[in-house]
Structure formats: C-alpha cells, structure tokens
Image (tube, rainbow, N blue to C red; front, side, top):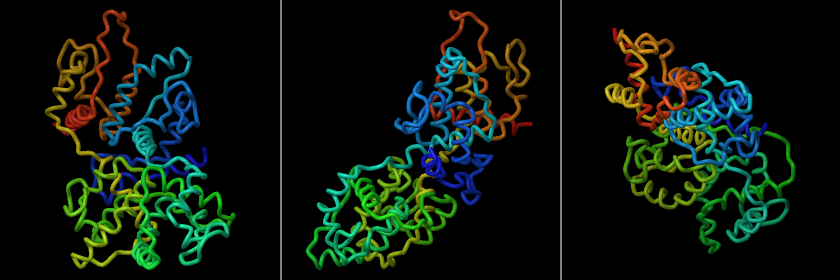
Amino acid sequence: MRAVLLALCLVGALASAALAQTLFSPTQDPLAGSRVFGARGCVKCHAVNGVGGKIGPDLGKLQRPRSFYDLAAALWNHAPRMADRMRSLGIQRPTLDAREAGDLVAFLFTLDYFDPRGDVDAGRRLFGEKRCIVCHQVGGTGGVVGPNLDALRQYASPIYLAAQMWNHGPRMATVMKSKNIPRPTFKDSELRDLITYVGSASPVIAQGPLYVLPGVAGRGRTVFAQKRCIECHSAAGQGGEVGPDLAERSINLSQMQFASAMWNKTPAMLDAMRSRAIPVPQLQPDEMADIVAYLYSVRYFAAGGDPKKGVAVANAKGCLSCHALRGERGKPAGDLAAAKNLESPAAILAALWDHSFIQDPRPARAKPPWAEIGADEMADLVAFLQSLRREP
C-alpha cells in the first residue's frame, strides 16, 4: 500500500495558482484523497489494484473518466447502489466536506496514471531482441558503448526515463547508425517490461532522489512554452499544429506509455525541429514531470458548464419538483437559492453526495427512478447552482 500511496502523489497541485483556474477551490490533493478513500471507508468495499475490499469493483482496474465532471457524475450515479449496499452490510455512510470531495476526485483521477509492474521474463527477452544489450550493461552483462543501466533501479520512474531517453536520443541514433543497429520502437507494455527487467537484474544500490512524482501543472505550462514544444504541439487547442494535440493524446496514456510515445516519435520530432531551426531542448526530470502534469491537468480542468442549461437539467432530473427556487411555495425541500456551501464545484459535489444518502420516506412504488446525470449535465448543473450564489 505504501507504494500505491507514493505513486498517488500525482500532480502535486492539480489546481496550481499558476494555472489560473478559478473553477476549483480548495486545492485538490490526490495524496490527501487517498487518505479520504481509507478514512471514509471506501477501501472497505473497493480495492485499488488489488489492495482493499472485494465488494465493489477494483477502481484501479476500470476504465476511468477523464475530468472532474466525469468523476462527479460517476459518484452521483453510483450513490444509490452504494447506499443500499452499505445499509445491508451495516456500514455507516460516509459524509464529505468540500475539501474531502475535491481531494477524493483528484485521487480517483490519478488511478490510471501509473503502470502496474511489468513482466521480468518478457523484459529480459526484449533487452536482447531490441539489441539494447549491444550497447548497455545490466547486472554485469552487456556492452559498454552506452551508459550502464544499473542506475535505473534507483531512478526507474517513467518520468526520469522519458527525460533521459529524450536527452540522449540524438547521440543514441548516431551510434546505432554507425553500428548498423535498427532503431527500436516500443509498443503496448514493452517498455514497462524492459524497465522491470532492468530493475530486477541490477544490483541493489544506495538510495537517492526518486523522480516518481510527476510535478506541478502550472510550471509545466511554462516549460511547455519555454522549451518551444508549443510551436509544434497544442494543448487543448492552444499551440502549433505540426504535431498532435498533446493534451488530447495524453488522456489515454500512462506515464510509461507517454515515455514510449516520446521515444517512438523522436526521429520525426528531431526532423521537424531541424526544419524550423529549433534547437533540441534538454529536459531535466522535474521539467518532464511538470510538462506531463500540465498535459494531464488540461483535461482534468474541463471547461465549466452553462448555467442556463443547468436550469433545464435541474428541471429534467426532478430537482425542481422538490426544491423551491427563489421563494416558491409548496415545495417539500429547501430553496436552492438559499442553499449554503456552494462556493466551488467540489463543495457542490460534497453537498450532492451527502444529499444522495437521504432516505426518501415514500413507499418504493411512489419513488421516481434515480435520475442519473451525465458529465456535461453535471457541469451545467454545477454552473447553475453556483450562479445562484452570485445573483443578488
């Protein structure tokens, strides 16, 4: 579990002030969210990559949604089943405040960011098949043309690896060409297996800095511009059009897949930079970490919704059949315009979460079906509820 928690330090500050994001407050912390996951009893029913309860699905093995509103909608839609299950098991329902809700969603967002351990035997085979062994040595076996890879056991995070592969890529290409070695590419889990083998075959060495934590999204946006990545690549539509939009590309990539993609595309990127007289930038591991965090956060901080559409959502989902709006009479629930703690999307999610566990006293035949909400609808609903706090 310690390794899981270490990995879940993902972005450091998903809502960094440098991103100028006004939607999300308080700051959302994935590591704090992992503690909420345990303290509020989620771990009693749900596992993360095999660690935790077996009643609900393993959240580390499911296809996860990609933005705050995707995750908020999923939590809302799942609430009735969770409530029924907890009642049947005698588990006290958890409540969430605004910070806990934000941290929990940030935690859930990180679950598909890290890779499981690779296959040692497959990695050993790849070390030979990809001809890494010609130039590199691991555990006393291999060539001495390139650096000894034993140190990767100490620094073997995808972030560190991606930076080193990028920085040494041009020199490696020259050496491979001189030795008539085809440049290898990596697909699927190959790079993950290869690094797992390197770690298993390398001798134990003294601990040093571990570039496991991805970084700060705000700094990453700055580095993305300073290193001139933005001249060829866009992020959510802002930037060049020579290469793909990296914010869109990164949504389906783990860290190791990101490293593989960078390596595979290096020749094309180098050609594009030469044609535009752009010097090849060197990237420190922390800079690479910040860039990756930025690309992920662009998708997490999806654009807010439309308050006018949110009114329609509230009406269509039955909210306004129970809740009054600006003093309407005859409604059994409170006036939405007078509701408290709607200062942020995370606060609204906490309120919706707690509200979802209130038992309807009506008999089952008189209860309407649970109104499920889509991600876009959740964004619009949140925008509408927040607009009520801004209106005089």
